Length: 131
Image (cartoon, rainbow, N blue to C red; front, top):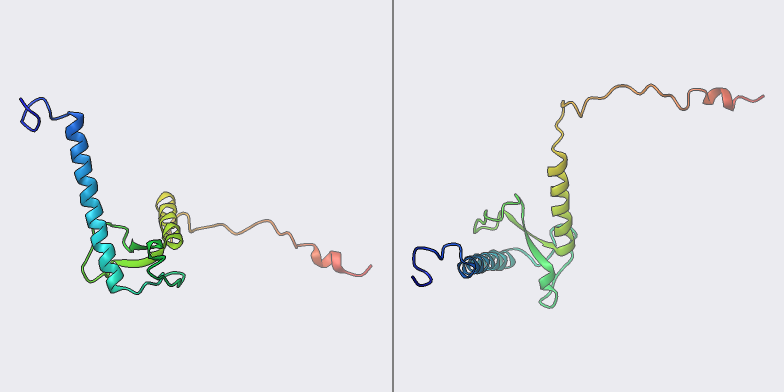
């Protein structure tokens, strides 16, 4: 049997390399496609910090998916916002922190608290009285 035929080459390193390379090319094409569309639709300004970009530094402007789903790419750009690399990194860090900590909703156990019993200034009035 030769390469590419059914049989023993299914798990071959060459076949795996080919599949991975194809997946990377498809991802790069997809990324290039929506990035180019977002740059045509939206101004070259970071939607968070307001930094403006020119052709010389446009590589520092990224496309952020508002819903964090990189496969959700509506052609009207409604799921995209252009962010500078710093704001984009910050947004993803905040999202990961949110996922790790879980969402706290009103009325949940984390939201309820007991009244504080320590009164650090309880005797302050007595201390301030003239002697």
